[in-house]
Length: 351
Image 1 (spheres, rainbow, N blue to C red):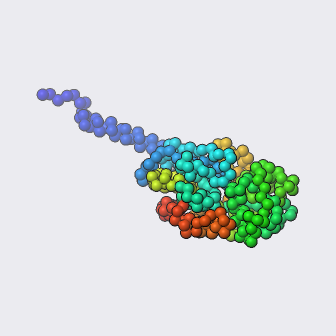
Image 2 (image 1 turned 30 degrees about the vertical axis):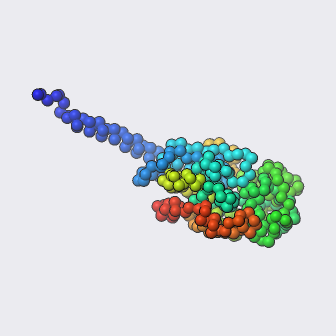
Image 3 (image 1 turned 180 degrees about the horizontal axis):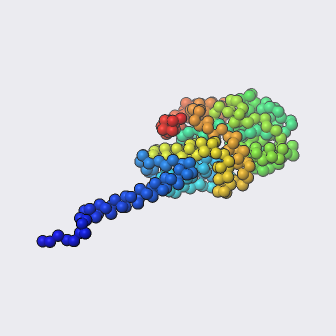
């Protein structure tokens, strides 16, 4: 039997050549994609398993939690082809419920109100600290210290809001009983700032962009800045929180997502002007100057320096003192934290 014409290439060789060409095309595509990410300052990740899911859902949030938005391309480089930012309930005054309900997978969230959810038995788990503060207490001329809010009218979005929770803890720390010695006035953020300017309320604790707007309008004066004033500047304000079931089912995805969020946090710290413009271009904020002030002032690099367990112990104790949680700090740590991903990433990133 004669041999079939092969033009000098066997069937196996031809198949292997085709396979090699396909591999070459894929490799070239991967290199081209990696080069694009490197131009953005993003190092692609290759040498670990892919995420168990290619969808990641986060929650649209405040300006100080900008790293969650900046992380979008980083999340895609980690293998998440479907990155979603969900609208929160506009009537929600505390920490978003979306992670607790499973509608969202991860989020950057205010640590204190997240601990209240942990105490209530909700399925959320703290994974890392992000920054140590963005809240500023603005007051009228009638208030020049935290102790002087005793008996005064203080504007908040509502009882149980992050504003109410944090200022209750701050007041209690200096001997003011927030349950009996402060007159809480429920107002929208816009009305709170307006009534502070009019002298109808005595103080308002705000987070970005409210402090930036109040400064621009020369309303009131700053009594406390949680990013610089002790002891608050030593403990995490914003933390990464995950849905417990998502974290348990998707450990690789959780690690990859957390890495993206922490790298994005570093980008906000090292390139504030670039990412302030990014936030405006993407439509997340309108005022570039307010965004730049926030990214410049918020201590985003603190995730590298501080132990989030210390923050849970400190704030857990403070929350218990004002009756907002029943659990001990140790119980909150056991029930609502998982630092293993953070510890592994700190070794990998040489933190």
